[in-house]
Length: 263
Image 1: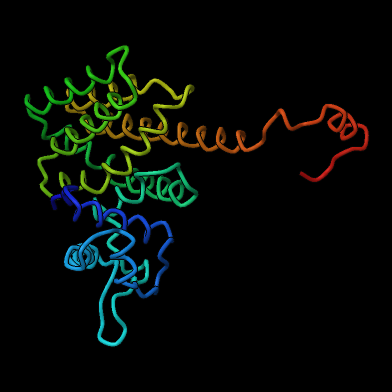
Image 2 (image 1 turned 90 degrees about the vertical axis):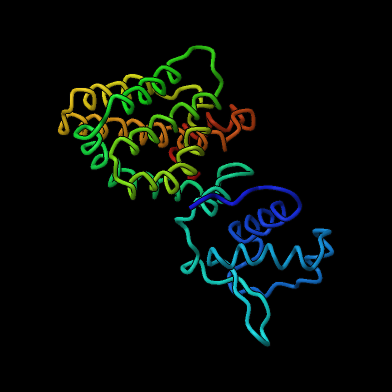
């Protein structure tokens, strides 16, 4: 499945509407006022209807006589669609629903990637190893920014799925990549994330040695590290919600004197 092309007014309209729906700005079950949307987005009615057709194909909206165009229940959205995943993650800061989706993605990866890497260890070719080596080299380059690190990581996991030589597993890239890219962006931008190169190198070494068991173990260790980075990020964000400058030293002392106090 090819991701939706983000081009022109039509593409921008699709993305604006999609993000509003995914973010709850247009809630499930709501009937869309096409005239108001047309005016607000400054697009023709034809362009608006064509944009809604894209969202309808992804299960997000539907149209019925007498009711008009409405947002379908979330349970009916194609959440595995690469565009739907991307629309959920791109844009503003990481939300609680984003974090929940990232944890869902981590569970999906824990199911798919250890099994996939076993196949990769059995079936890899010299061309596959070259692609993995190139991605790992890019990952280890010094001085690169977060975007470079993200692309190198995506290239590595893309090459691993390709090394399975299973067409359906290769297509799982479309499911994993958008969420993985978002996770990578926020993790690689954090100051205390673990160095990803050693864990990836252990996976590659096992694949090169054609050792499925070692490859699976290395992949599980890599995913454990990814989970720690994500947990650390969540703890950091929770800690940043409290501004230390707003704490009165005298109040802190009185808390210690009076005993525990609810926070």
